[in-house]
Length: 266
Picture 1 (tube, rainbow, N blue to C red):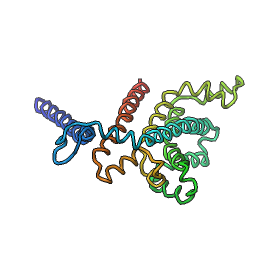
Picture 2 (cartoon, helix red, strand yellow):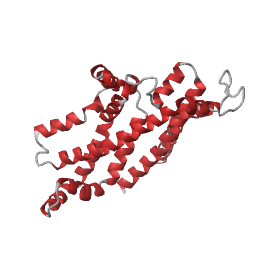
Picture 3 (cartoon, rainbow, N blue to C red):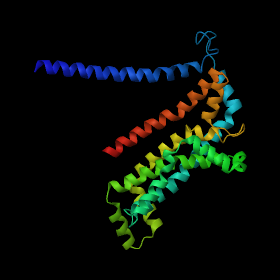
Picture 4 (cartoon, rainbow, N blue to C red):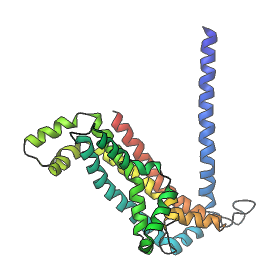
């Protein structure tokens, strides 16, 4: 019995050690990147020429519009997917034929973009609608298509977790139309799942690179593409500043996401 207790404690300690080692392995490059963004010159040693904020000034001066474009595309993507994804999920989940072969096929088609590589979506859009490339509309369409399944799945999962079908039918009997039932009855009940899906969409759109890489122009690029260009041209300090700015958006959203997931499990 004592031997089993000792073995259990050793295994538990090994698991904790593995978790700590994995966490350190992931955090060390991020820490170096953040520190590198404040380095005047990243040569053989990181701070051989001291600290500076020059690279942030450089990013905001030359790529300030890139940050604005990124946030605009991301916010529009979120708004469109919250409306479109939620209503499509409501239609599919509440349909009297939801278990039919055609409805299941429709659901698979709506979630298909999640299984298609972003490179394929970007190339298809670039080849099919090359005339729209300069306007930036293709980047927005690509982001909406690619992130749509995240919102759709979040809402359909919430609607199927409880008996919302009965609630919807009761509201219909009382005279509420489809839009009124959705926005006044269903939407408030699943708002946490919708918010969770919206944050997922925001994060995925904010960090999307593969689609955007085939659709951007020198005047229309996003943070990940600017980050790539900086690293590709060996401007490590500028790329580190880009990465740090990206983390400034991503970390608070990740925290909010975890809080929402905890609230849904209570």
